[in-house]
Image (cartoon, rainbow, N blue to C red; front, side, top):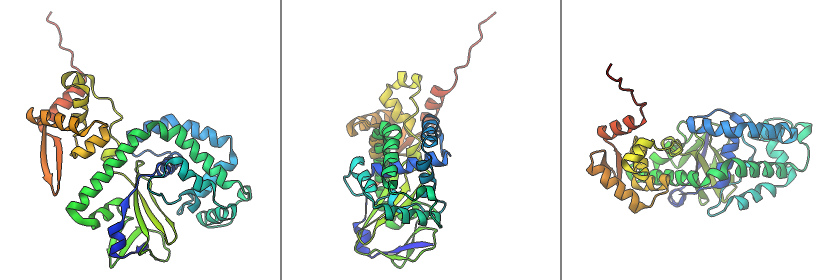
Length: 331
């Protein structure tokens, strides 16, 4: 079990950061695994996995680099620089490209838990890694980034609301269940690996959401910055890609129908705003109309107000998505 020791000031100053590079690396891990966690990931893999495999088939060195860097129990550290608030992808990937070749090879030996294969005993490994991450970003992340960013922002809203209801311990325990949890006595478990604990009091601690559901890791710039990268809430990650049923859109209008369709699980107005891309005022007006129609109800959870469909709202959505039955004509 790996854990970090931190004082109250470090935890109090900790914060959430959204990182395009972390999302890109998580997508690289998803491509490497090829195992979707939900239909949205399955469709994404259907589109992008063949091109990814063709790319690696044409470049055996980079293919071996990926398999070595992702390792079995440990990721090569140079592939996951610790995020910094406000950086865009181009600024982040520079830090991968600028890693010294000797350090990259040392990190790969750690991830492999053994000697470096002869094919990877070369100086262009950081450049190859950066080029691959740039390809994943350009081909498989940037086209979806606007919505993915909204999903990540919605997750941050949900986590901060959870802190208001159950304190930081409930947030830490929920980031990567079974791996990340508060142990008490100033100790935060960050994974299941066996290595000496780290004293990080006084450093910057970050929490970084990504949308792929089975992927997370930790990273650090020793003594300065530590990050826990975790999968965002699945109810958010697998939403928004499916079109609103045409019948429901015709009945309520596409925007209002989209809000109703999302509320199969309770969400706050901030989450709805982030996921739909609609303005807060528009979302509020849609919720008011849906509540007055008896299709949506609200309830308070701590400091948050959650909206969800009523049984009548479920019936309307289900009816709009069902295959119409053909009424037989009279003989």
